[in-house]
Length: 152
Ligand SMILES: [Mg+2]
Image 1 (cartoon, helix red, strand yellow):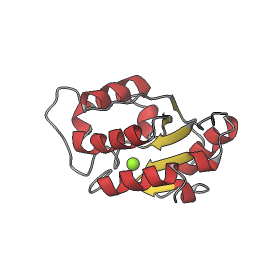
Image 2: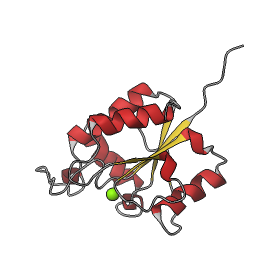
Image 3: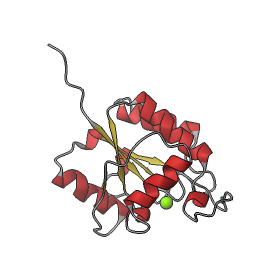
């Protein structure tokens, strides 16, 4: 019998993940100008390694400018994925994500959080920390892949 592959979830922050301090490209669109193709390429690396991955936006960008504008900015920077959903607004980043997985009956082991913020409690064990001076790096992407494959 073929084994059913579990869906995995990537909780995506924007600032400090798909950009870094002071990063601005020339664009008439202020949101596009804040997304670095080099960082986005590393998100694509994760998506290629984990085809069953669904991306849930946990960044403040989900509130403003919102999911559609965020997806468009990501796509203009080369993003090959989609935004499956957004987290609710509870209190901290960690609590928002926790509320999402609780309400959708998602196992903690099936998620990975990409974020440069540190308020990830109670899910710090599912967190790949990025830093605002560099955003998501190849090392961070590799760590996320290992976590989602159950190697961490
Ligand atoms: Mg951030």
